[in-house]
Amino acid sequence: MTVRTVAIVPAAGKGERMGADKALLDLGGTTAIARIVATCRAAGVDEVLVVRRDGAAPLPAGTAAQVVVVPPGGEMADSLRAAQAALPASSTNVLVFPVDHALVEAETVVALLATVERGAAIALPLFRRRPGHPIALRRDVFAEIAEPTALLRDLVKRDPARVRVVPSANPWVHADLDHPEDLRAAQCALHGEPWSTVAQMFRHRSRRAYRPDPIPQPQLERLVDAARHASTSSFIQAYAVVCVRDAATKGECARLCSGQEHIVQAPVFAAICADLHKLAACCGRRGTSLQAQSFELFLQATIDAALVGQNLQLAAEAEGLGACMIGAARNHPEQLAKLLGLPPHVFVVFGMTLGHPSDDPLPRGRMPLAGVLHFERYDVAGTGAVLDGADDAMRAWARRTNAAGAGKKGRPVDETKGWSDRMARMWGAGSDYVAARQVLVDELRRLGFGLG
Ligand SMILES: Cc1cc2nc3c(=O)[nH]c(=O)nc-3n(C[C@H](O)[C@H](O)[C@H](O)COP(=O)(O)O)c2cc1C
Image (tube, rainbow, N blue to C red):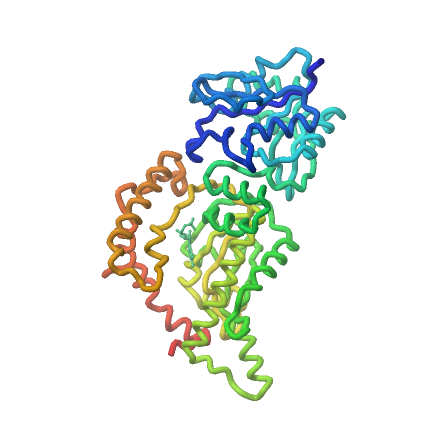
């Protein structure tokens, strides 16, 4: 058989963040690598080369693929160079198919290969306007990977004119299989179980760096519309969301929120407001006045806003966006209210940056569940162990973050401090946070919220 199309599956990593060899992960009762090989075969790929590190576990028996062995510790480009040297002489097209994208379906591969067959030098799948993997390349273009420092993305970026994008409805062209929660999400999607929302929740990380790509207005409208279907106390719907996209206004918002740069960078800064304005208008229509001095009403509106905010973050994350809540929006509530044209009885409970994330922070995890979930009665006796667990978890996260060079703006995180140290410093005697928010109550009163 003349081999024309070869798929290369770089699978030489140890899967350290996942804690397992990614090629051998279970995806719907089959391994990731078996799934990719089956997808490639179904799409008409003639041969599959799987790049494995020396000493890696063997591929499952019966995997219809050739194995190329590389020394451990290399990068993906090293795997691709090794595979390039092993390509059959007759091959004309190459498909680079990382294991992370094991859920990509054959129809996407067929479309990519057809695009290259029709003369494109490089074909990429596009999901929601963002390119992903696998990537199909003409062999002569792929051969550029032999340049000692070339990366696959260099080949793609070198000449935009030679790249064709292939729209895809398959979100897995963007997927990562880096963390256990990524695997859970993939497994849920495969099983079609109603757990995908839960899996999405486990995947949460606050994102603090963004690409400049805007969020299309229809998407923003849909997300806020979905978010506002949260439960609302007595159906008061006491919230509003002001989405700021104008760069100058966002800059002002950032200035009022202790200069947080990601507010400027994100295409959207959403101000999540507690909003009693509409209730005041209802009362006005009926010739009465809003009992805005009620602490209960303040609390209801604030809770309502928080529920919408959390829903919005989850909805955004479910669509591949990233978000970070911004409590610093309460640093200068009156100035922010003026900037955003808020009427009386409205304040920003917190802000939220929204956009296409460009950072990749390690999930922070949480304190031991025993500190949060109690059965029948609150387990006060367990608090000491919970704090120890929370401290250990925080230090372990700091170590992992530093090892991955993923600290805030590249700065290392303090590995010595546990969670309880941080909380005591933040909220104990002499707390800067408390001092900074001393004026909050007066400002909220002036904005039309009674606090009892
Ligand atoms: C109401 C609220 C306000 C927050 N304010 C900020 C903020 O002003 N700046 C920021 O970078 N992160 C902010 N965060 C994000 C938290 O720091 C973050 O959720 C927490 O450290 C846990 O990390 P994770 O979200 O990545 O799991 C806020 C979170 C909440 C819920």
